[in-house]
Length: 304
Ligand SMILES: NC(=O)c1ccc[n+]([C@@H]2O[C@H](COP(=O)([O-])OP(=O)(O)OC[C@H]3O[C@@H](n4cnc5c(N)ncnc54)[C@H](OP(=O)(O)O)[C@@H]3O)[C@@H](O)[C@H]2O)c1
Image 1 (tube, rainbow, N blue to C red):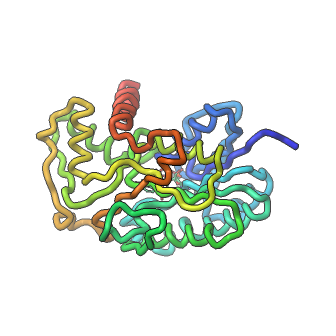
Image 2 (spheres, rainbow, N blue to C red):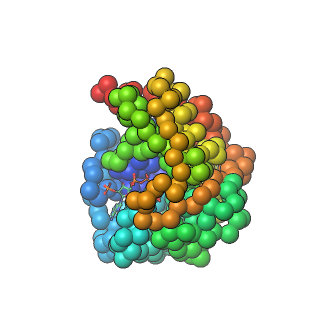
């Protein structure tokens, strides 16, 4: 019997996936990382990169059946919240149908499936949601991610559903909110940030480390892995302070000003992370540590 642990990561070119690939390689795993439109900028003898549109069910299922990964981390998703509202058919294909294919193939080869879900499965009326609170999404993105969860939950797979919130950091092809804040403020430009939307900003590197721990422990069920509860304005000011940028350039805004939003957003989708805190060693909830890491990574990327 082979002792080599092979891990398939979908969304290897994303904000979280790019860090997952690095973290898993640093732990000596064999990694098969999928990407679609954006390449994965890492080369490693234990990394196999595969360009595959996960909407193509046959290729996706074939790949899993042929490579037989011990663990699948399904991190790919159509994450554009307004885009999902505009293009529901495509959102369903990526977030639901591809998850169905992964579940189907994972059952055959008996992989442990780690499904990366979201705080947006909740309606945001309560805040600090626990794993046992009832989801009730307010937008189509949240709905598709919840249906994905249900496909995983109702399968007979060994699975972990990980719910982060407002992922930020450096990596992937799109700019996270934190990078946008840092870039604008460092150019001396003002930014506006919401005082009435609460989230639990989750740093991608710390989240990747926590997921790597989950790969080792393989706990069953749902786990909330996220940072501390704060509103977007507080988050933006913390980024400014951490980077030594002018806090006064951060102006207060309100959800009612966001006229261009197509999808409704939960008002307070912050997460209670006590279960994951008691299980994992990674300090994924430590804002000071997360902002220090963000500072190093952002300055590193800027000077490259
Ligand atoms: N960002 C957040 O604030 C947040 C919050 C909570 C939960 N989440 C969840 O966390 C996970 C990771 O999010 P993220 O922010 O890291 O995502 P992201 O940066 O938007 O990246 C999305 C990833 O999915 C891949 N992907 C999308 N459509 C695909 C397709 N048709 N075929 C193959 N790959 C496809 C992308 O590949 P290419 O770029 O190569 O096309 C990319 O690697 C997602 O499941 C998301 O729902 C995100």
